[in-house]
Length: 189
Image (cartoon, rainbow, N blue to C red; front, side, top):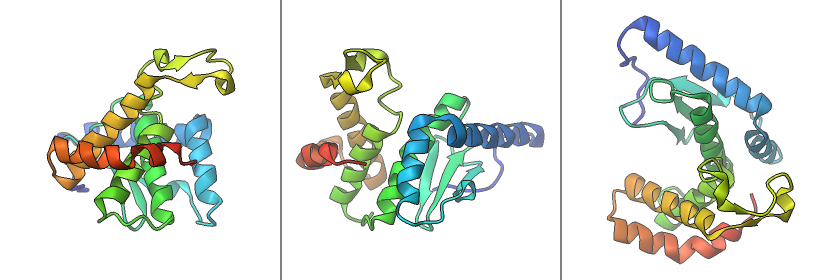
């Protein structure tokens, strides 16, 4: 559960965390191509998306971000330590935000798994791991084919998320993700 209490120690540290988070969030919204692309898809739904739909707050230990059903994206200022981390978490949560606007039933484990596959694929989560996921010219992404390692990363991230969120065993999460993976992976953003 996300909480808004300041639990990072001194107020100076929390203020710096908050300022960094806000700066990195705004940089991502302005400069990150993946984030801008997902925001464009959100805006195409006619939802009045603005940067205030994303809040930087102190969170419980271990969390990096999340989606409230209001909808609002939470970035955990006390656990996100680099701009790259903010871009990665924000892009992931923006995919969930888009899925929420498309009436995803978050109580349905298969719907959750679908959104987790999409979030891992379309966010920076697996793209940032390393360029070896791609076969071909990185300067010409339309000529690249996504490698098996990239798909494995997407699948593994989705399994981990389903396991954590639904509090199920690894084998149960794997079974659900494997059941919906192909169709979910092939969906457009």
